[in-house]
Image (cartoon, rainbow, N blue to C red; front, side):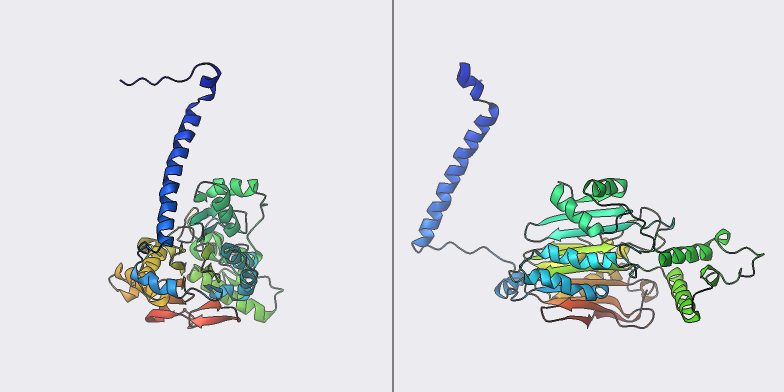
Length: 404
């Protein structure tokens, strides 16, 4: 056994284990630095080292770096893209831009797919999910089943910045948000409350007007304020019937690229309407509802989260782009994997919608949907701002027809 003797007296007090470690580390770093600088000097003298190897799909992206900022989102982010673009024009961070876009939609009570006014779970409680990824630092943060806080994307960002975790959920996420200064609020708007009551009435006799009520056959109509104008009553009644029969899965992903080629993203949602309390979809799942790689690009999703999680859609899209696929073709490949899980059975596939959105490092963007149109026949689109103006672009589609 080799015995080490340490200095005695005051010198021994100063010779701590920590200082011994740091002294050893400093020596190692110095030696490494000498080798590094020696290599640099050799290169300066004309002996060039071999360039780092890149996968074929990345070579084109590296050679064609973005020359102007680009932001894309789901269609419901159209009006908010200008806010994010303004941040990028001023040299702001790409995650600042993406979160700013999503915050506008989260704050909008008329959008019942995210944030304030989102459709609730089966208990009438709004539960929100969100994730963020910062390409330049390769970090991520997420929250799930967050109640009473209308801006989950902002909370997810603080998980990234102020913890060494990636995801917080439920009561823990709420306590964290409150510790960061967020205030509780009732997220259930009157319109969302009516939708929840209409759903309850459609699924449970006890929540419908009784047999002794004149309105017992008119379940949805019986919930509406009789003072509403007739046109408004009809429109609201039609909307209630639609969300009860076909629970929406709305969400907003936003992907932002700056002139330097840095990219970040966020996805925010209130999740599947009338879900079991505690259900978590794909939006807060890194690699599913959101995936960012600063060497490649970013991807996000909307629609039936369970189907996306099973194919790790966001990660799949990034890996397809890494191999050289365009954003649109990469989105279609992820959808093909979803269809394969059902052996191509269009009857079952028609029961849900799924859309993917992608942006690569060169600024090329694309989106693809499982079906070509919504149930109402409207074509599916996504929002783009490339520095000129925000606009809607039609999605590619895997199948023709209506889904959802």
